[in-house]
Length: 95
Image (tube, rainbow, N blue to C red; front, top):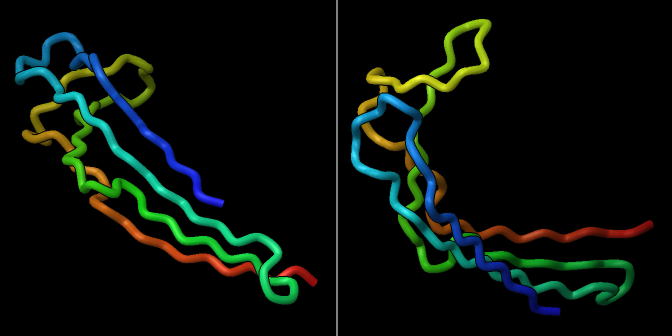
């Protein structure tokens, strides 16, 4: 079985008071291939996350201890990068 997922993140806003440029939109594409009930009791899967290696940035947010309000932060001057293209393999054996 082959499955895919498109994750499209858009129109994010910085917290009030953060004067940096807007946070860029991004799209990631994930692909998973599964072979269920293969030889014996084995299941196998392989995945590629962020297959096209999109640049994904998340804005840093600071919270004052004891507060639930998001505040702009100057301690982290740049947006935080997330995982680049990632591959993983999985094998399961059912008893």
